[in-house]
Length: 370
Length: 214
Picture 1 (tube, each protein chain N blue to C red):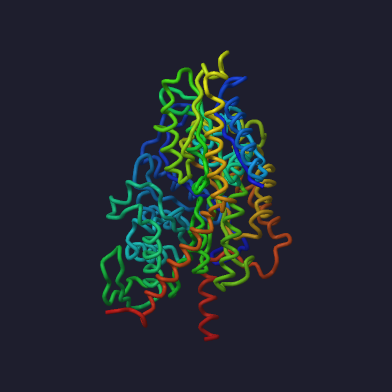
Picture 2: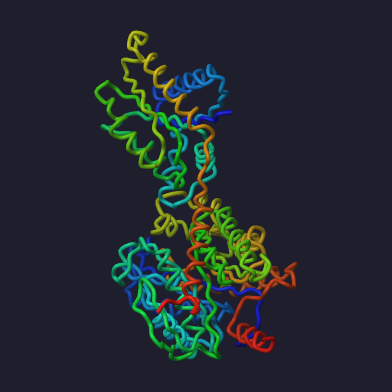
């Protein structure tokens, strides 16, 4: 199966929150939550999904503080799944350590790895890693500029404002097949991230959970326009990923009834708008698999043909058993239809979702034509 | 055409806060008309937006009705803001609305402040609560605000001097509106994009080995 090209990749992304189940009041232990993440990732592969992405957080109630450790453990128990992040903090992580960790993960997983970079918006975390949130934007630019060079140049001499200088640094191990992992830039609200992704011709991932579609459309439009401006291809050839959030049962009303307490008490949006209001205003879909299919196919109407769709399915205290049932529905009923339907009318010149194999081929072609 | 938007935080119906807002609206437009400046106005009542304002605070985004209110504020050339005085300050609803408006929506906005209250003893709410908040939001606050107490709306209201205070404040605000002229709205989105582009260009220039200073 490995190396198979897909126009679009489908998968899940997790925050890794330890939240009490509002229907029982019980929270899993940290150990149980970490092992649940592994079970969820393995299930994602089993039901035919393409991607598992983990968040990175450095404070309770979250557990994934060391994403490549988690992803390495999952890599050992999977064969096809692409392992990714949502997001890797480019501000507070040392770019040298990011380069090393993901290079090793690339080799261990046989190239089944990419990453999504983000700034992180939790102020107190920055000083724990010797940084300052007020410098988040210039820090992002400097760290990412260095990370790109570490992955692309054999010997790096570098000096900057936020990190000690490097003299004659060589990354070990070098990226697998000489090709760095594909980089997405994840954004909830700022156009700065769209510009960063467009500037380098990287992928742009819109969170697409917390905001109305009109906002996502605006951000993706900017990214596509700027991608073309920076001469990486036509606007509709830019690499776009979207988040999304679903809860399904075969019978639509059962889904609503079962999900409501999780929605009402969810740490992020609970105690605010009703489930009905939130589903009307944002891409959240709670209902039957067919409703999820219809809603998801509609995303293309406002972002264009895109490359990656990730769903959030395991937050707000949902029990593992329920999450695994969601994955069954995604894998059996939803994603096969989405794969087929998204293919309809998709122009030839729109690129397939990037993989290690496609990047290796592109590098070979660039080498031949050079 | 000068576009005025009035934000009023009154809770009851009829509301003395709304009454004051209407009188200010009329007085300012009359003042502008006298000076040959035609003006239109849009009134935004906060009470019907109460839940939407709290939802926006909790979720970080505004629903359609609240978004329309933001647009009315953002596209205005001048704002008249009226709140009831609660516990020595503006009402929580009034403050919450301005806590969830988009960034820089009030920057360079001429603003007239006004408040209502049970007694005259709360009148400094204008100077101690409203003026600093609007200054913080980068608005240009008109020097004269209007405070109206229950007595001002009572039987002897012609004797209370409210009409003169409204007239004086409206004349000041009209003068401010005229000198500020049509408002240039700031586009924070575009500003962030441009700033990021120049930061990236500078960073990649610095990375070019040809330009490294050793």
